[in-house]
Image (cartoon, rainbow over the protein chains, first blue to last red):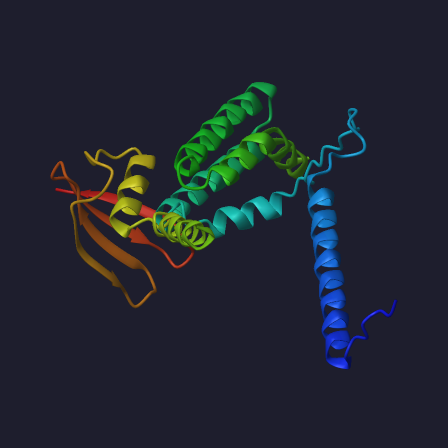
Amino acid sequence: MKTPRCSSSVKLQRTKLFFGLITIFLGIMISSTATAHSSTKPIFVGALPTIEIVPAFSIDTLIERLKSTKAIGLFTKLALKGDVEDLMENIRKADTKSDLSKSRSEFDGLVLKTLTLLDDKDPTLAEDIYVARDQIWQSIIEDKT
Amino acid sequence: MKHITAIAFFIALLLSFGSYAVTIEEDIATMLILKGFDCGGKTVQKINSDMTDDNGTRLVNATCPNGNTFNISVSKKGKITVELQK
């Protein structure tokens, strides 16, 4: 029995169909692989050690941030600067421990004022100043000695 | 949907930047309160004059909501002096 011979145009159509199907199949495979990768769960499920990054304290950076913040106006910044200069003068003059503790309460009051001014409009800076308040005080005391 | 979210994000960002700046009226009132003066509000009612003299000192005259008027001077070095006008 003779098999019917295909004409060259039919062969060409079959070849095109074959390659078309292969292209579609590969496309489906690639997309499903990509989806599978994106939805796979992480390999390590157990508790991984966390590293807490604590930014290094820099009083100069805090001062620059205070100078450049738009949360406080120019007049208020100058008033705060005047308060800081008065406080520094008091600390320089302080001889006894009680003088220093008085200056510390003045410093705390000044920090509180600054935090109140920053609280709504620059909470990040307020938080950073609050966290660094003891270090700021230490650096002031070190300057004195 | 993504476009709408992006637009909403940028509008929120712009609004947040806009609300950052403090007006001079608010700034002066805050400074007066910090220095222990009675202003009767969070912002001064009127800035009557704002000029700089020959020495580079800025002189501001402002009236608070409670009627108190202040002469504020800012020296070249940034020292603020406040005087209640009688």
